[in-house]
Image 1: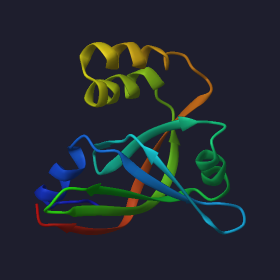
Image 2: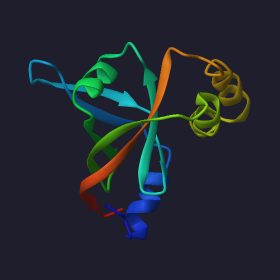
Image 3: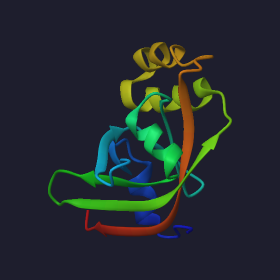
Image 4: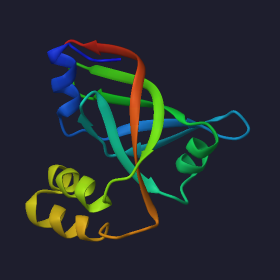
Length: 136
């Protein structure tokens, strides 16, 4: 699903902490905060290979991502999609993301911890359905 709405694309490119939902093996939802980058109509993220969300994704490669604005006027975008592991150097994905969230110096230092770190995995969420309410 390609998002052609400029307002939605602009909202998704802002620095926000999203909440990702995956399904546990017993069918219950698992929710976790997560950083993301929106690029080419996909959400790019990283997580630990040992995290519950990644174990859930390995079993069922789909997730829901909720990005919201928590101040009036409230707004949100909920993305339902398919998850795909990507082969990209983690540092390459993490550095611009960490700088966005932490600033230049702290972000660059934080990103260094992801250089050649095999315990983390990068993945995309490609939307197949989007729900939005943006009256910002």
